[in-house]
Image (cartoon, rainbow, N blue to C red; front, top):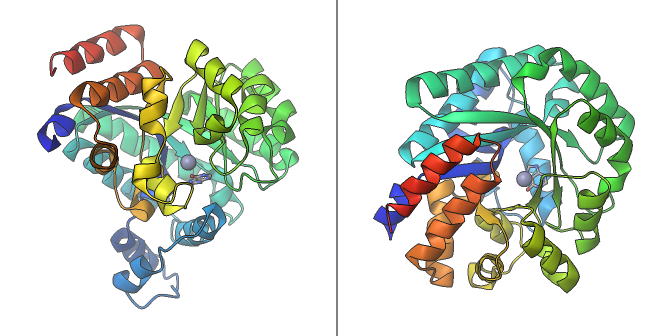
Length: 331
Ligand code: HPA
Ligand SMILES: [Zn+2]
């Protein structure tokens, strides 16, 4: 199974680049930028990665991002992630970045997007990994702040393809951002949003109807509403599911309780992703392996998950067909 999972040409659609900051690089950057850390060493930092819910993770994740200061830091962060992709046969990745986490600390937007984009260009020319960038608004902040971030981003509009919505979900429903996403759609960007991770199935409906998203990030709580499951099955609006994230943040008590296998068998376009791999214990292959062993998934089921990732991506139809054929050739 390990060989089969490795051989699958994998597409990642739900990855926060700030969540790929491994403790070792975090310490290196803290030293380089002379940022004091409340942890003595890499081991004690890693030991602090014990989460009870989304917010307990976000508090540590935003603290970690404070070591990212220079354009080169954003390059190094992104390049380290792309090397992981290369090792794990991830051939295409669509990456979130959270500009407000950085601009609110006085880091220029240009340095954030510049460093990430420069690494992505090298990822394509040196490693053959294609990619797209998705700017994500922080939903615990105001709609006004999201509008200001959009304005700041527009001079760089050629560097990203879409806009998403992340951070603390409960109490920050999608409709809080209806107007800014209407503007985002007018400008021609793809729209995605985190919904139904911890928040209710209702937030998935409003992400679909108010924000008119092309994909739902997470979405696992759709099962609380059978009419929504049927809608997702019929429309094949993709869910970018993150199994290790869901168990680390106690969305499911253990992997054997995860619903990705059931949703797959019901015909929904569920995909496998790593979310914040440095914090949740694994990249794409570790996520595939974890669900395979806990849910006893077969090779055809794993291949269908890989096909769903290809289908759900923003790649050209031609590239999708070529990758689908590669998956099929493995069965
Ligand atoms: O899983 C997540 N959910 C919401 N916000 C996030 N920001 C990084 N990861 C996440
Ligand atoms: Zn996420």
